[in-house]
Length: 354
Ligand SMILES: *Cc1c(COP(=O)(O)O)cnc(C)c1O
Image 1 (tube, rainbow, N blue to C red):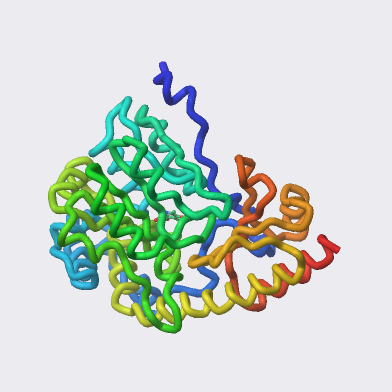
Image 2: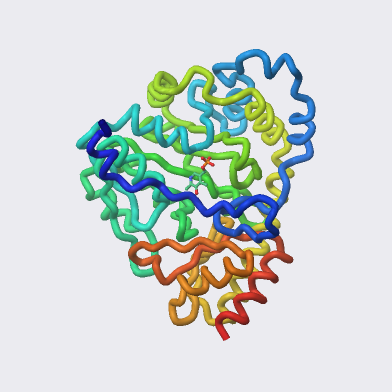
């Protein structure tokens, strides 16, 4: 009864969710340690009975208008999804067919590989270099129908600079998907990082994915958005559910957008903690992949004892991410929490590695 390619595929594994009520330190899913804007909480309290009784705005018109203005594009270049997760599914449905090939660096966000498998699309992993930097020439030479670049990349944390991104977008004839889920953590000293959305007026083969989950601290609301060439976005609109983003989430995302300075302050706090924590890990003898431009660090514990340390931390209620995969099996990915939380992790690690 089950499609053979579905039966054959491995299910995507999200970060472990500790049982509710247990006091834990959850640093395994790159969630934001700081709350969303107070305006978001006001919007939540302001939801009316009527708004729950009626269907949501099918076009997410207000949110799209706000995001179009923010990125300097037309509303027709913007599509809202129930998390970028939904947008990833939509883009495979709209642009790729069984037997097509999509190329992406390895390692990267494995959600793309899972969704490719669901659609019978071949995923061609192009290895990153020894230092995990992306090999752009190899990606361009892959002959794939589409490229996916998570920038900054997960789980490495590394950012491809604007010149490299511009070069890839200009030279690749097919679809280029750039997932900027973590870009808000990449700026320096209050300066926002350059986004590939700047290239949209010249390159219509570009689809950029953003999310409210990480920097806006709204993982639970499930709102992501795509910005891309008008024809690409129109095709994805055709594939989506009519009411794919619920009323509450639309309003929360809108409120979050209208208080960007709150988001920028919290991203800045995460950035400072990340720099401090990376230096402390090095002092404990960890090899830290870097410089991370995200809200997590990929690091190799002394002796590569990642599996054991992950389990020992979990026994203390501290959850970090371990990937049982090539080039990652001896590494840990640790999300950046508050300074106090990272001090707690550090104290535990100090005991475990000594
Ligand atoms: C967390 C993450 C997302 C966000 O997914 P949502 O479905 O919007 O929560 C997208 N891409 C990458 C690479 C991520 O790590």
